[in-house]
Length: 157
Image 1 (tube, rainbow, N blue to C red):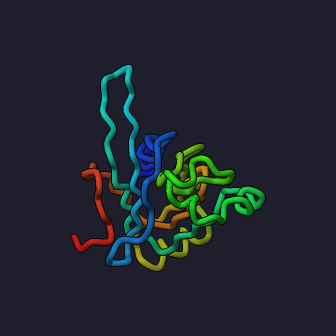
Image 2 (image 1 turned 90 degrees about the vertical axis):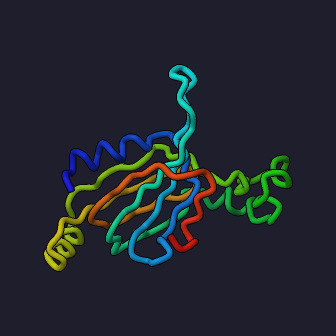
């Protein structure tokens, strides 16, 4: 996959919202579902985009929420927006994470070279940063498609 095209696809995620991420139900590819927010100036409406990272041989997810915030965010009422809105702590129940600063294609690494050689196709590494989770994915191809609101990646396609 051409890196310039890949970088452009990733740049288009900037400042939108991740509403789901995880391996697909067949466990080979990795889904990142993005709600692309509307722009009132252009009259565009929000859309949900599926970023399908194909042949994902490695997926790392780590929190970007500081430990001090975690300490005050353990109350289960914070996983529901209605019960958590007036509490101190991170309200997990908003059910989305802001894609800021966004997604970045990382330079070629020993891991991408090793997988490229082993499988005979190019591999890439991407870092996706949000206000709650940071993802690092090692994959070969990226496909982007619009999906209906309510898309459930855990249901057989």
